[in-house]
Amino acid sequence: MQKCCVITGASSGLGRELALQYAAQGWQVVAIARSMERLAQLCQQSPLIQSLVVDLTDEHAVAQSAVLINAMLPSVDLIILNAGSCEYVEADNFDLGAFERTFAVNFFAVVAAVKFWLPLLKKTGKAQLAIVSSLAWLFPFTRAEAYGASKAALSYFTDSLRLDLTGQGIQVCLIEPGFVDTPLTRKNDFAMPFLLSVADAAKRVRVAIADGKLRCRFPLRLSLSLQLLNLLPYGFRQKLAAGLKP
Ligand SMILES: NC(=O)c1ccc[n+]([C@@H]2O[C@H](COP(=O)([O-])OP(=O)(O)OC[C@H]3O[C@@H](n4cnc5c(N)ncnc54)[C@H](OP(=O)(O)O)[C@@H]3O)[C@@H](O)[C@H]2O)c1
Image 1 (cartoon, rainbow, N blue to C red):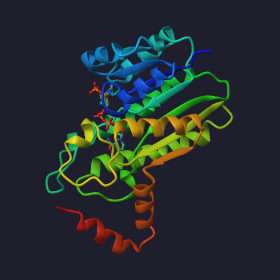
Image 2 (cartoon, protein in one colour; image 1 turned 135 degrees about the vertical axis):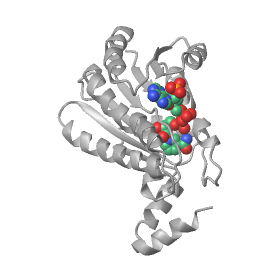
Image 3 (cartoon, helix red, strand yellow; image 1 turned 45 degrees about the vertical axis):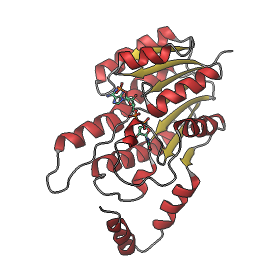
């Protein structure tokens, strides 16, 4: 039977590539984002991709979209909550709006999607929910107070959610990528070690989900490096982080 998935943040970057790769594997895909134009372009790439324009920071729109998704797909095997944004902030004059916008899409939108879309997942024991966080929260990066904190919250949320969904027939996979070449990172003005192509990153995500992994951190070299840095004495680690400031 044909598999079906819902992917958020599918108008660009990792989400777009995931939509294309799942469709190429024969999955029916509902691709979600705000940009109608970019979603329409995506749908032209495959007859298996349908789109839904939703601002995920609008709780009512997320609730209403559950009804639409239910009508678009015969059943839902997989939901990938990938939409996100990154805004850097300046500590000498915090833009509170940047914190609110970042948490709205990176954290609260995920909570809303889980609340309203989880009932759509097939309760077969094989249904899957994948949440895209980041490796960024493992190490204090300069100007990343909003982004890193939102992803730390998201990773904790996902691990906690997995516990509470135990026994409900839904596998939860936490995705924590390193640097991936997408529009989000193209605005970065610093070196991005072990930068991956979006095709490579999407394939790693797909394989981890297919293998039923609890968590997928990649690339291994960056993930291990950041985890090793966390074993260092706290003060030394902080000095290293300060050394990365421009
Ligand atoms: N690229 C990296 O190096 C990297 C590393 C670690 C983690 N990540 C995470 O991977 C995910 C995808 O990032 P990306 O690099 O592919 O970024 P991207 O190219 O900027 O794509 C972000 C996607 O999120 C959607 N989006 C943003 N705000 C939204 C909203 N309010 N409602 C609905 N959709 C919204 C955007 O579509 P619209 O603008 O059309 O709404 C777009 O499709 C993010 O969660 C990011 O934090 C990325």
